[in-house]
Length: 355
Image (cartoon, rainbow, N blue to C red; front, side, top):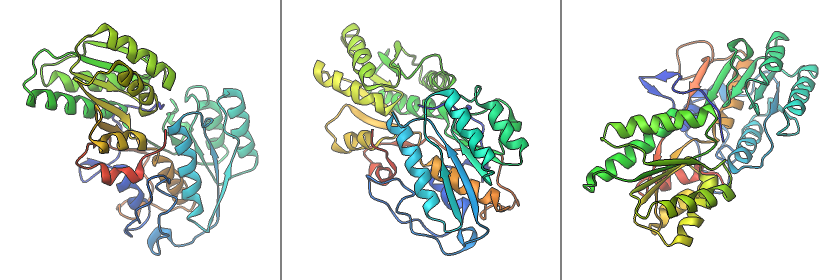
């Protein structure tokens, strides 16, 4: 469940930096060890021995994020903590996670008063926490804005997050291409959103619709499922009952996708393909099984939190990204949304998060 700008990002050699590329670009050219599927990507990465990963000036990184009541958010916190543990020169100072706006503001204020060197902040709401982030910046504490963006660029030093529009585009291309190859005309395409009023959801839907247009297709019906398993089950059941034949479903969020898949199984329906969103390990195992309607998922990886910690460390130490020519960390970095299918799922599964 995320809120980010659409297609803004930093380009390296003409391509948006993906999650894996960013981790190595932030530090050195040392290859990362492959972690196990159940662990955050940063947790078992071998400590690099050269370049920016060499111990430097000790820095204290403050960290604040929403409560971990969603698999993706839980993975954000785990990845941030694991990345911080890689460095002997980092003191990681997280505050209590909360979904209460006022409590998060108070928590961030406590980090400002503690005079941390840099702050990594995933706000519950970028608009409502914009002012306290600006307070940190005005106090000389650089803010790495993680995912949900602050409207005022003076409120953050660097933004890093996923590409919501790109998620929709990736899902639309996969469904459009697959249906064209099957010779399907006038397909019934169903879209199960997260929360329809959020800008992130609107970006995902727009990207999906734009990509489908290239194949002469459009969305037949869409409904939001609030990013919860329970709503996923209810909404999917309603859509399945309303449409006796479906050709494709795009579900925006793999956490709510657990409920969507449960409704599909209960209805004993399998005539369509389904694409998920975010890249959970649960979804990837469904894809890997080869026996599920879930044929693909498009990534929105919580490994961005690992990269945010690495960026914060570099900013606090006055360093740039060693693979780039510039002396300073970029102001904005958008991770690529990648399509995970049975052909490449083994590569992506170690980066998946548990729903």
